[in-house]
Length: 118
Image (cartoon, rainbow, N blue to C red; front, side):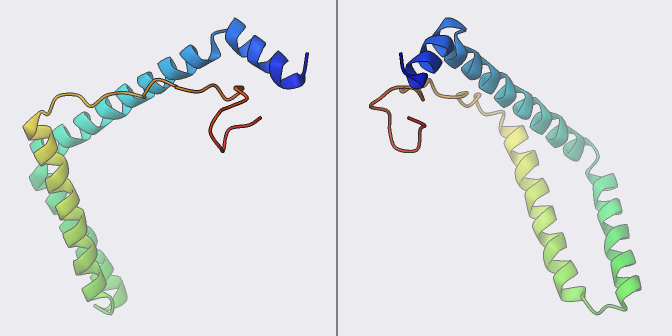
């Protein structure tokens, strides 16, 4: 029995692919929960968030003598846009997106797509 066959047998024996999918699904759910908490915080505390960003913007301007004002303004606009997008997604309460897709190929299959170990 070749090394690859031994690895495939062992992976099948311990249900490696199923466990990897379960782990991936749990990771996706955790990321969704973290995004939801962050969006809720941003929505509930937008004034505090804006105040903190204003403070940071003023401090940078003070320390640099306004030398990078254009860059700071652009970054601030991007941050505001990102927060708005996060809050909008949270408000829409879209149905959950699917988790990790089912594997169609094993990394140990001889006819697996390119990029998988052989």
